[in-house]
Image (cartoon, rainbow, N blue to C red; front, side, top):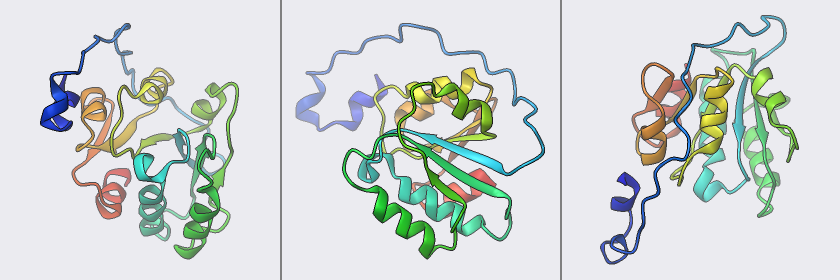
Length: 176
């Protein structure tokens, strides 16, 4: 219901709120992932920077690149709008060559979650963040923006961190 208030006033009365069909998973704490290999941040969703804000996540990792040189970022999702090339250029511009990977659509996303250490949902808004629920079911802590009502309804201090502002610096602080 909270998302209704983010819409223009004239549309709010047209919204029907459907309760979640399934209870949110119980987060049981981060699993012990293999300590060998790179530390992996995972993000799942179509490449649509105006909504999903992948560029903010890339810039945030760029801020942290020297502090956490072992960190890498894996994006999973369709390049539906031809944005991958621009995001790849951004990753190079912020010094993340060889650390940001665009892995496209995959049929079984469980592998992505199982290989990750953190799940990041940098979306401006979401209806219901299914990928966030999936990440929690795989015992991944979720980092998202507090300004995203759907993320705020999913993430609390027991299962992740909400970045205070929708900026690369705020997201970098939350990831760190």
